[in-house]
Image (cartoon, rainbow over all chains, first blue to last red; front, side):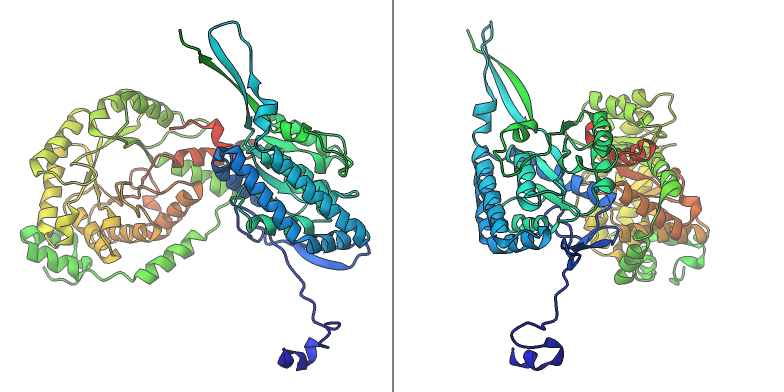
Length: 306
Length: 317
């Protein structure tokens, strides 16, 4: 320490002139942190234009790899018991809580909000995550049921996860960077689907940190994959991908042109579930619409005997 | 016969089969394989980038080289019929595959399934995959497959005999199987995953070629590791040298573990750069695979439609 402090470029021991560590973040695909296949990255800036970090600029091939990873993880994640999924998600909330200060700092830097508001957003995000985790073993009771039928059968409706979900995280707006991200990601995975998230282009740091949290949690690799980059570049490939089963257009709603319309049209080719909910106040009660939007209902007829 | 290596002319090799000792002198006189070098060479070739039009051609070429295989205990004539239908019309505008490869008792179903399409029927035989049966049982296995209409026979060598140095036993067995094949093509499976070293792969390749193989094939697919690029590189060098020494042009068939279009294209690059263009032909290079076809078709669909394809839209088998 003292030797390092003596070196001229290390600056003063109080850290004021310390050489900055200019971070270059990577993607999160299949539980690993690869660079973009394209080798590209972009600069993330704060509202005043100051340098925050470099983030990977994902290409269509990264999106393709992420879908492959999500598909691979789907059998295990959807096959886990609902109770187990809930426990795994609770554990993520604990880890989020442990990184409270880091998340708050990133929210503050990226959005320019005062620290107090940033802390409120982080707390709300952790609460939101816990709320969704609690839903894991309750979805089947609330959304499924035993149906009365005129015949010697039991008839059940069972909610099942849609499969691989492409989540376009909200791009801008108050509370979008972390709370908005959690509010679109958690409902996708709680029911057993696996997700490919396209993070906010201008505010990707909370998403990057969230992927670090997920990597050290019990969530299996590939259940959540995080891409940073341009929505307009990546989303069309996800929307048209035949192995993606649902897409949340939250991140495309404010985009120039008719991006959301184009994505919905592309998604129709394999009848993806398209979630196009109106721009939300992320601090408000989220309701169950998003969570239930990623469920398919399977109806089972079972002979009663006699 | 001196043991100065393969370049003495294939005609001079005719006397090799006189004894274990003469075969051993020849096979152990082959230059050794630099394993690190072979792996490095395979890695370099594997990193080559094949894009757009070249990729389109490579995908179609790879499809036309596939021996579409089903070698499971639960195979049925119905499954073989489905396989044959897929072999002749893979869909997405793709060309038919080269052959279907089945167990001997399912050859009649395969022959009926591909009738009139020009697709060959290959049958594994000789107590596949272990090869542990008496010679007359193996020969009866081959004869039944050929009698049922198999165009190609995939035999396994006796790895136990090969590894303990009884080369003449292996040689004579291949010759006997060759004689039982009649007009059918003979592919000799070396099962490189059990041979241990690339030196052994080179020796087994030469042994099989000298004994009359039409194709040398890496693996049964039942042993890991199955086909790898370095092993295939050594086998391609062997067929190239055999032809250069005045022998016939022998084919190569990697089988097992080739599952993605990217893998398949790597093998095509390896063929082009090692044996050369004459081998880029279904008559001289085949890929033994079952799940590979779906991946090639997904790539083809992606190039045709401009959207990434999904396995939900491909047949399961």
